[in-house]
Length: 278
DNA sequence: CCTGAAACCTGTCTGC
DNA sequence: TGCAGACAGGTTTCAG
Image (cartoon, rainbow, N blue to C red; front, side, top):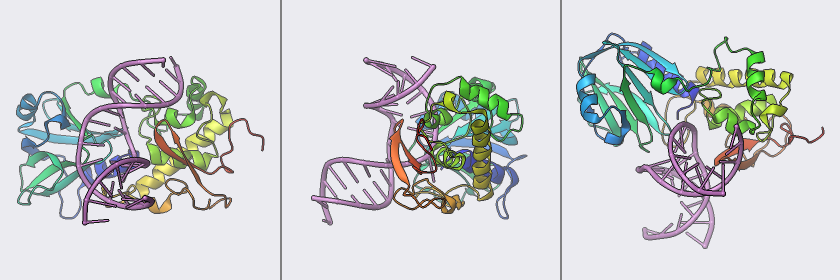
């Protein structure tokens, strides 16, 4: 599922807990079990298992699409869910679900399970989280990011908007859904060269991105395909996977094309081609 | 710097 | 029913 709003939803769930499921901060990990070794990106599995044992969970945060779990002894557990990853807090007595890849056993009767059907997700355990996170661009929801800076960053690239916004070093957390939705709201064609975006358009794009991300978070993320249950932002998509259907704003037929190997959905009338006159 | 293709994986859906 | 092909929320690597 995971784009920024989905990761944020999981982050808040783990941080605050729910009725039956305890909040994780303050809880100790007694030991872990690795069912798919390639899920552990760093360090090697043997060292990972020894270093994770008996670590206390202190703070749970998000940076881009990474979940950042601070542990005692200055360790950080970083988890990237990629395409199909999810994190479940569940009783230890349950059978392992089909796609469990890494299990963190807690000191009570619960465990934290990393479930990931497509095996693309990755886990790091490190004392230097910046080695992994420092390449990320700014957080879109951080008010520290001003329209002027966003405009300046756009000016520095000739790339098309769609692949640029998906580039995590340009801005962190956007994925295919929220990029398409943000471009639609801003009225910008996905193929527009970034350095052709005007100052006003840049401001609108930043506002639009923030709006769709906040809506996504408010709806607890989107649930698509067979992977995720929980959020319902998929019921509020304006263009994503709506190709062939009618644009709510102008009535035109929503189109789909492939840009940078990613399905891209847009309204040909609300998002005019770059260079086309209105 | 930019683009496109391929790779890493499993599951679902569509069409023949 | 079987089977091939397309497609899926992401990222990295490599060729041109």
